[in-house]
Length: 387
Image (cartoon, rainbow, N blue to C red; front, side, top):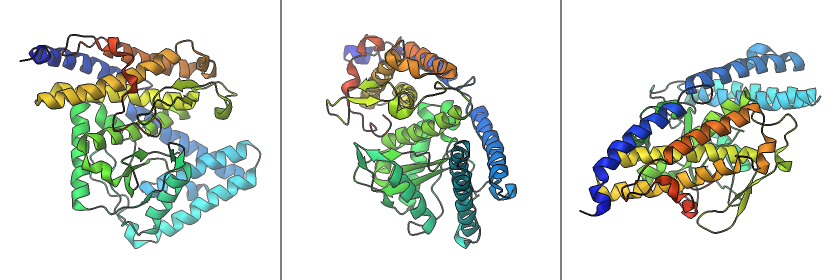
């Protein structure tokens, strides 16, 4: 047995203990308790809808919360838009945003194919929609995704994909794998989104857009790789969770403007050496994802009986942790910290505490994870949009 292999039992025992400690940290408190965060978001949208309805002369009942996932997604997006417009004094634009939602909701309510829209399996994870790839509502959401999402600077061309029994089986395996890697956090994170819309694209990527809250998008070929599908489902649902956190938290200074934000240099990009520059908002999105992703892969590594698969999961752990550590350093007094509000500083410290704890991990070769801070240039399969 190799020296690394000889230390595997000790690594697994130490890794499980550390994993449990960090997982508890990331699933509790004001920034980690997903149930409380989702409840706050729901309350926010109830109140914001009433305010917008009153300001625009819209019937409040027409923009009330709904349990139908498609409709609730469009309602929240409409409330976001109406609130922005009304706050800027453009009340008529706010009225039009709500009117567009009311019209779409009426069309959905009268569509017999959407009668089961509110039915779920109760598994606290995003499910495939019951609509077929040719249904108008599927096309509407994919158009929203395509219009607001880029990969490598190019717009995503998302085309409808059929939900086959094979795809459903792959989604279920990905959810199960996420739960193995994050036994406490997976339900918390995956429950943040209600629907996962498969699409046909050129690369096995995924995405989230504020234009379609509560919905995540995953390329159909992603589901051919269980581990990648698990990672990307967690990844996109984390974006929804962070979006919900931001609704009631002062993550940025009052006059923050994303296009004028100080930035963080990001020296990895789809396996190339190109340096990108992330605003404070995108920095938090990536920092949040990579911290959780490192924990996911550590969870898979310590529970994987096959030694070769352990090595693969550990390689992903190292890369994700190094990337999270990169953002932790940037948010520790770097120029981008000037963009943060009080809760932004709290979020940075909270994520950094998890990164530092994970850095204590001793890998099977005897080295500490923190010794691999420069290993962020790898290209895990899930490196994409916000990362």
